[in-house]
Length: 219
Length: 219
Image (tube, rainbow over all chains, first blue to last red):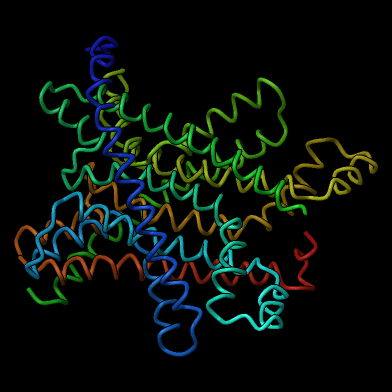
């Protein structure tokens, strides 16, 4: 039983039908991860116990596998009577896991802003909030845009983990086909190629964006 | 089953986790060195080929690669054990990331290093082995430590292809004992205990290399 190209081609539309789910999950998780990560980083910058705890939380998340976080949420939440759909749990898991990485992205993005900027803002007697929103944030955005794009690709490549929780994304579809037809090779190879193509295309886009931003940086 | 028993049960799998990591490094390190140097030295079609191979391993979703090689290779008449497939896929994926660190480390060296070697009449391979690689390897060592952490974390996946690592053991315990909070907390902690010291070592290394006056500091 060799590799049946015709069968592989017939799998492609069914698996591609879930590309929307995959992109949706990746996008929502990326927004969630950025929000939690930003919060983590802001708390980490505070002095005292809260800052230290946030720093530890970031390190803890970064030292543990994403698969275990998905299992953890999937099995522990119902134990406390919280019943959520598997896709919601999956998005929560990916958001939580990648928040640890995005916190580091925000840290680097803020650290890269010259100290003269907030000092100049204070010299102009801008308030703390105005300094953050009008001076720090816009410059930070340019620093984090490219790393954020790269992490979007990482999150996209982590969405097939949700197949373990029976979320109908592309790998889940591939396994559905496999269990119906007892042919694993073709649907899995097709799913792998689609993910590879998506990752390469988006990475290329991020690289172009990065080059434009870098060019804009030389003022 | 007490908390202690759950811990012991999960730790029974630490040998498998360590073995897959070590076996995976046997693939990752040579791949990173050969292809990282390859991408640095080659031009034209050869470089395109090297880049394509790196991108295949680096840009694919690792969970899909694992399933594809586990289920699809037998179709092409290649039968590998779950051990070898896991080590190869996880190792080459990590090696793909590490190869970029090798290449970037080599490219970051001042061209005077290479030129001085040439002026002394050294051959190209002698320049690479005696001058460029030793400096690049020092500069890339913190990145390499991060790759090792990613590899350890990725080994959680091998539980999906029947290897009895820590994750597999935890799921086994979960089948006989309904205590998801304790089991999955213990599993997260088990990975943290393994990965966090490696992360701290990486940070120490990074600080040491960046310190003024260190022999590698001039890079």
